[in-house]
Image (cartoon, rainbow, N blue to C red; front, side, top):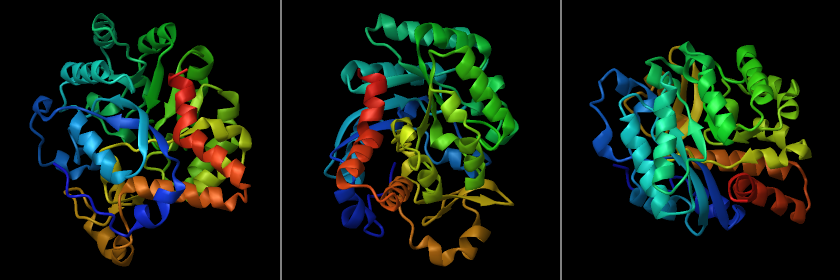
Length: 348
């Protein structure tokens, strides 16, 4: 399924391995077997979302041994693949089975975008199996729409939020539209946090932003300060500027959480805006969805790229270095981001 591991530019062995703490809690992992995926059309293959449709538990553990060599994965948040081709009930069942096997796995269920009863049934099934889903992963693709054509209210119905609040569940939120740069997104976050204070909201990919300025607007508007239930999950986010702004506010150190977005974190590149294709990745490797014009334009940069998860960690590392912290404070910050912030939410 996956190409052989390569530290393409020596980023892990030469720089990141010595900097990353010994224990990692990975807050963003997709799991699911191949047999529950319906045929994928050629048109769908033109989307980066189609890069991966399955990753089994054994494959993930093998992946960790290579990608984060020398580190211990102390826990993770796992949920199904979000694409409409993936059987929803079977995918939730798979996460239930993994939770039964390993208590370090914090399972989130993939929700049906409109049928809340189906999501509640998945939650209840887990309980009957002796485990508990700790959160929900909603996603707009199951509506048959792209991120840019959907609104959060369409795939996160109020009845689902009511249920989540009653059970004290978390939500891994992949925002729609242009992400936190949209006024509608910020209004949704404020409203949800106020109305449903028992829902911990993990903003996947730092809330998603097309340009760093969009994230700056979100942060400077004070949404995080106004909503103590909001947390930032850092997968895919490879902008040093974004981390600098967050970490420059010490009161937000406990609101930033590491996530890899495995297996999508293995895409060899960084997110880039294209006028022709929208939000895509500039990548070292060629994919079925690659923007060839972009690849040609940035040919020199492509050879400096490696796994996306490494670029996210590198951006974080550079931002931490720019803070001028003492060794003790820097260590405290790293421990918080890579492990204790998530552990405090889900393991205490």
